[in-house]
Image (cartoon, rainbow, N blue to C red; front, side, top):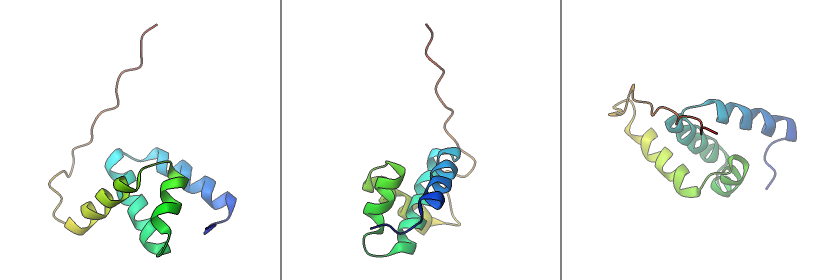
Length: 82
């Protein structure tokens, strides 16, 4: 399934990488839903994430606007020291 042009896929991937972990799940879930049948597989491959991640994102979306994790973003780990 090639749902989007290569240039759009590149923009989507760059945007995805700029998001927090929680927002990545949610964005992936929305994109998969827009595509319908085969969307989860396509988006999981495009974003190199697991289909389960997309399912968790969908669960997150279904709970909106009541988000118990609102405002909580896990900090990125410290870079490895040489």
